[in-house]
Amino acid sequence: MDSLDYELTGPIGEKATFGLVALQTDETVEPELQSVFSREGVALYTTRIESDAEVTPETLKMMEARLPASVSLLPTSLDFDVIGYACTSGATIIGPDRVSELIYASSNATHATNPLSALIDICQEQQIKSLGFISPYIDSVSLPMRNYLEENAGIKISNFATFNESTEAKVARIAPQSILDAAIKIGSSSDCDAVFLSCTNLRTFSILEEAAQKLNKPVWSSNYVLARHMSKLVDMNL
Image 1 (cartoon, rainbow, N blue to C red):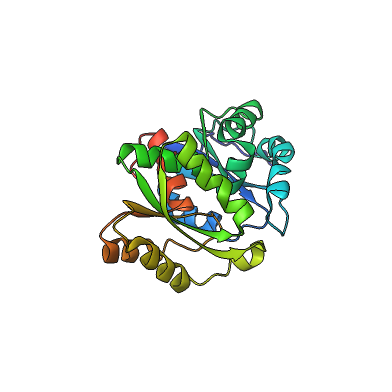
Image 2: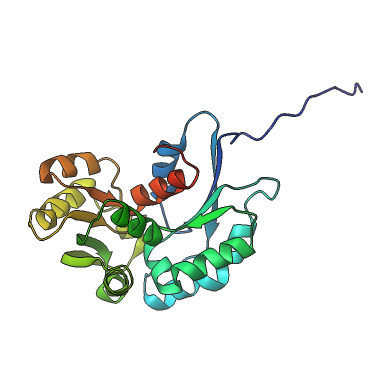
């Protein structure tokens, strides 16, 4: 048997190496973020965290104990520039600072983020004071997010609507047209400076631009603000 010579190269993500913690039940965040980060010199690695089919504050809180093991399954040979925890409501219930603490303790990531922190960052940067807020979830899940934004970030939730769903598999299949219609309905009020579509499992990338054009104001989703913040943390344009 011949022994072959070989050369070693650097990692695929020579410009940026991202890690993503996606929920077991999430069908949307991975393909949407791959569409953003699919460029030369950028690598996105995904791990999954066990999550329940029914979304409640109690099932979301359970991910706090599961997060370290999920993060540790990302390739340990890589230096991660950013690891994002892809759950807006989970970050709210667990606490965004606690999420970052668990990510740092379980990896060598330079930065950690989540959709809630990413939303606050873009609102502060663009001086957004009031949001139209759309959630797919029941009130016990969406209310803590709205309260957190108002009480901890000074962002007023001027208009709110929900699809009132608790089953994650149904959330993933809500039609983009339904989401677009909801965004236009909520965002048409002059009371809000921007519209936020909460949940990484909503299919939003195909409708964000159209909604923003029709409303003449920013329309963001959990996946958009997460991808944007991850990019910003490595000084890379989205």
